[in-house]
Image (tube, rainbow, N blue to C red; front, side, top):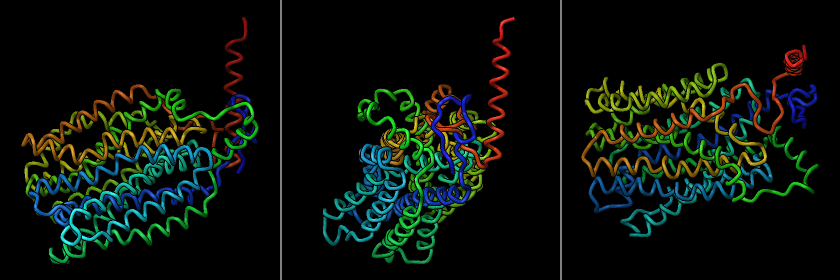
Length: 479
């Protein structure tokens, strides 16, 4: 693998182009996606156990109040995610992506495992929900450095021509983790009596975080640092004496425009995401009155269908661009959110499935594109920091609070269509944001040399750049 330091593409030589080792790329994608898989295993478990968790930790309240309290604890973790991003992001930009991602992996595992150890409210009273909140805060703090680091890691390891497809495996891991957690909970609900689930069964999925975390930690510790970060470190050593590091506030001020774009895109992405994954199971059962097992199974089938669609969109964006796909999804939410929820609210199983399928298809327009789109907004030396802060700030304000806010809106207004209006608002903000983007498909990341798969491809790229430069010289030649 070779990396270069030349800034002008027209002056590049073959030695200035990064040639990506395919084996290292596959390992990097697998290790990064595994962290997302584990994070969303926890989310799948928590979402599908929300009703039981409400009964275990908030007894005595009404069913609606228990659900809101359960989602409130879920949402509380998102309040500390920006703090985690502010801590882990700068560390990742200074000491390396791989080291920080190894640490966030083990921290996530500990937080999830500890939830399974907490005694019930009946055993220790008010201390039970307090300990649940503490464990969720540990999870939220660690995940503040997870997604931004994982997306950065994959983007910096990928070739320019396949960054969209490789990045889509990050969200493939999200869906796989959610599906694994949801399937486990659904199987336990089907096999165990309700009282057994209440007494001890709900703890088992959280205990599985320990072996998953240790396996993920082992994989991440064996990774090499990204080529783009190595190149950046070489440059920084050369310029360290005359290029002071930006403070966090300076970085936020200098990068305000791409940060706002990041927040807008993440809002679109995560309102759609958490509405479908975290809120929908409870909406189907608590609001529409479907049986618990039917609601869980429907969402799981949709998740399964979304997995190959996510990879499909990732592949297509490398050919047709990121902007058209994200714009299509945003426009789809604006036009189809209400019809989709009307289908879901019909109560007819086939129509409910059709409504969920539409929402799932629209969401894959984002899940297949965002892991490549978001890192491309920022330059290498602040990419981890800016992405972690922008992503987690948006997730905290608009993503993780989606189940809580929509549950409250439905309960307050008695209008089951409130989730559709919420998604339409996200679609409008997302579409406006997409119009401000520059297309980044098949282009090098900001501040990095072009990345290709082989030396032969590097030679072809140099020849192409020389021909383009020759044409420009001819065009500007005086008559």
